[in-house]
Image (cartoon, rainbow, N blue to C red; front, side):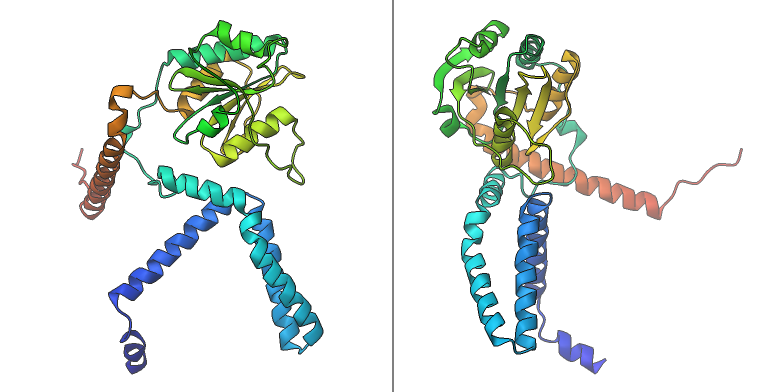
Length: 306
């Protein structure tokens, strides 16, 4: 008992908070790199550090010096190697997606049942697919795509099936690039997207699919990919490609579930306040639900005899 008292005598509230905050930070870092090539790279660095420790333990001075130089060089190049992951982490932190609540209030997260812009895009996608015309349609979400839009031709036109078909026709000067849709408008066409790095052991994709994966790895955009060779329609989001969607209605429902509705320009300035109110309301709702569950567990309902 005296030993435990002496151990915890110097531990204060700030120390406990420090440990908890560090644990949460490491937890979110693991969530960030999970499923990416960063896991294999970190594993390789840890193997080098382990070999360096063994070399020093066995007094292998020459091998230890070489491994130490390799580890130092790897540490210097880590920011360059992890540049996509670091950019995605900072971008998620900026839009509040890194510390998203695990639960949400169902009243604040109602699924949309209709959106005319989504219906038009779904109809145009299957018209292009039936005619074997390749296309990339990027739906902007919270992450701004202005620097990507500036690589193409500015349009600021209303979304329509005819306009999308005209953009991606083979004789059109804009058909090779991507079209960016923002707030119900075609902001720009013929845009160049960053290409995803080819991954070992995974399916090899063409340039169009790699471009869709590249932009969704760095932002929260949703991309519709129409294959010119297969005439298939697929969705790219969070750096992953869905299976081919074979029905227009299914594509429309899918897009409604993964995209956010267009914001009203008159209320765009109050978005931050609205988001903070929604988060506070969600926290209160979660607390109420948990309190109700605890009360039900402590006082289970009694069944009346039949």
